Length: 339
Image (cartoon, rainbow, N blue to C red; front, top):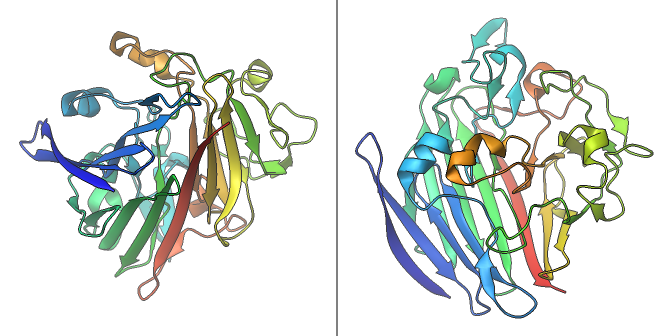
């Protein structure tokens, strides 16, 4: 395993952005920066051994701060959407900023953990560890929350993301990674021809503001059925694009493979395993907002392992609440191979 430290520029606030790059003996390279504990790059070989970039991102911190739609970010404290930016703890109403069109709270708010400087080290071989304390009241959330996110690159061609969090007050916690994947290599093609398999029998329908209605609907006979591998573009028009949470279970469990993505032309395949009850499949529907930066809709896809969206307001969803004395843990594994 090879390790290299890199400089990634200076933020608008004057903070130095540092990065660590790991490379295993099979040619897979990952790079993480301390701004948002962000995975800025993953490079893997194709079926001919050509190593290329398979994530979306920028090459400087200024573009990340000005334009990033959470490229590679660690998002939270609560990933995904909270209806009206509001939740209640023991009759106390917590009102968060409604940073999505003035309607919902999204991905922890405009100054969530994805936009802040973390402590970062790589003392253990093949592991990059990022730590951050989100103080009581930050972005409106209660409690001091100590968060650790570790990225491990293995010689078995896995990226293992481990999360840990502890609090001194009851608070919601739902962390995830928001990498946009495109297995074609250096973004040669859109992800519409990527074949996706999701081992999920149900998904969460959403309202006009992308908040779950509360129903767990069977995927059978719908455009949301990926139980057998099919091209993402096959039913995308009928679905009106994909930005939905798929239900893996109603509680956290052992880490198991729930998704498989294949780009047949390059031969690259990525499996995703998780401990989480849900996985948000997003087909990069709004990337055309970055036309000036060279991006188009469907240039990348996200598979965000997480709790259900708006779970803070639904007792029938798996709990995202953390209490003092408890430890939040989560693991997501990305496995790479070529066919």
